[in-house]
Image (cartoon, rainbow, N blue to C red; front, side, top):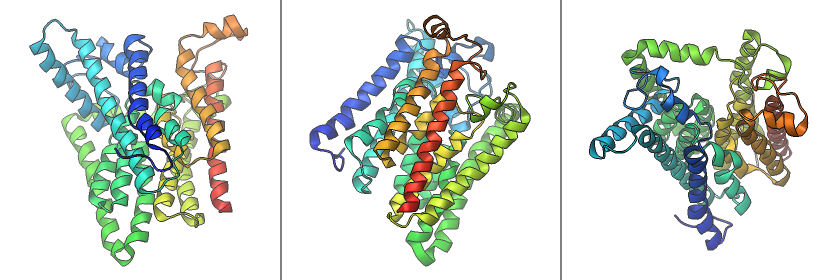
Length: 399
C-alpha cells in the first residue's frame, strides 16, 4: 500500500504493516494463548448447543448471529474438516478457533487497507495519532478476536470507498453484506443516498433508487435464505435480539430489572430516531466539507450515536466506533480514548470482581447490575461518547 497522507514513509510502514501485525498478534495471544473470554471460544466450546466444530449454524446448533457470520462459521467448519482429514493428530477445536481468528485477521487487514485509502485518496486529515488509534485502539486490540464486529465495519468502510469511486451497485452490495453481519451499519444508507444526490445531480433520480433496490435485495436475499432454510432458527434469532436484556446499556443506572420492557422500548425508539436526527443535522448544517467528508462524518457519527443508545452495547461494539478517531480533534481524541479504555476494562475485570473488593474496598455484585463497578465503567464510557458526539456536532454547526 502507498503511504498515508500527512505521514512520512517510515511512519506509513509502521501503520501499514507493523502495527496491524502487532494488533493481530496481541489479540490472538490474549484470546488464543491466555484464553481470556471470547464469544468465539465460548460458542465453540459450548457442547450444549450441538456440534459447533463440524456443524452448520442454525441447522446443527443454536447460533444467534446474522447470516453472513453464520456463513463465515460454516467456512471455518469446512476448513476444520479438511485439515483434520489431512492431519489427524490436531485438535479440531483448536483448529476451528484459529480458522475463525484467521478470518477476523483477514477482515482486519481489509479494514486497515480501507482506512489507508480513505486517508490517501479522499484527503481525510489523517495524522499519525488519528490513524494509529483508528487501527489500534484499546478495544481493537482486545476485542479483535473476541467477536465478529470487525467484519461489519471492514465491509462498511469498503462500501464507502466504492461509493466514492461511484461504483454504486458494488457499494450497495458490500453495505448489504455489512448489514448481514451487524444490522447497525444500515445507518450508512441515508448518507449514501445524499452523496449520490449531490454527485449525480439529475441522474440521481435513476441511480439512487437503483442503489437502494440493490441494497435491499442483498439484505432480503441473505435473510430469506436464512428464513427458508432454517425457519425455527430464524424465529429464535429475531426473538433473541428483540427481547434481550440491557447489556452494558445507558439506562442501566435507572433500573434494577435489566429485562425491563419499557426501557427497552425507549431504547428501540431512540435507536430509530437519534441516528436519523444526527445524520440530517450533519447533512444540513455542514457546509464546510467536501461531499465525501460530509458523507463519512454523517455515517460514522450516526453509527456511534446508534450504538450509544442501544439496549445492547456489548464492549466489542467499540470496534464499530473506532473509525471515529479519524474525524476527531485533540480534546475529542482524549475523551474518546478514555471511553475506549473503560470499554476495554469491562471484560478485563468482568470475571475478576475480587479486584474491586480486595484493592478498592468496593463490595462487588453481579457484573450485569447497576451496583457493579463494571456497569459504572460501562455507563461512564457512554457519557464520554455522548460528549464526543456533541462536540463533533457543535464543531460542524460552528463551521
